[in-house]
Image (cartoon, rainbow over all chains, first blue to last red):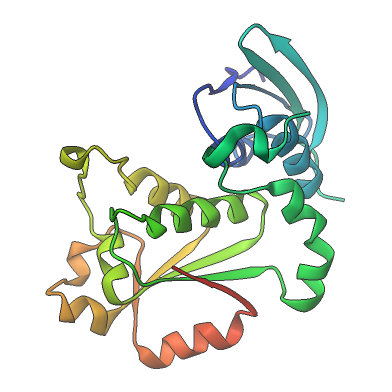
Length: 77
Length: 147
């Protein structure tokens, strides 16, 4: 199922991970979440959030003034 | 990689450090956090704003969090609050996020009554408790923060 990227532009810590938590609750395991964020702290917050929640951090890509993050919803091991 | 220092005072929670302490927190204090909110909202030092941000971050990390509104903190849960005239962010959306993510918000009934507030004045989902229930909440949580 394709979903719109989660727009976290302009949001400061901890808003992006709160929005991610809200979105991933509506997703099925295996679905990919794309997050757009421009808070530099998100570069360690988002992988740390994945580590804590069991979701798989796939990659991040610079896209001009913001960064794209890709997360696969996964069961907590 | 960016560090919390890179964002100056805009970063409220360092989740990396939080995770580093995860083992110790689990062993010593459990994973449930109780936040006691005693300050009125939208003050010059806005503890309630910080409290709800911390609460939401804890819930986002799939831990449990409960906020208890007491004393002046009772005003935090009032519905239809609008601080736009003093140019501050409205906490209502953050409160709704907290409830949607499974957090509990409890309000001490005597604190409400003392300030002329009723159950109907509060945002839906906030539950009233009395002093004995407050003691029970404090007893069953091993970690607490007071604002």
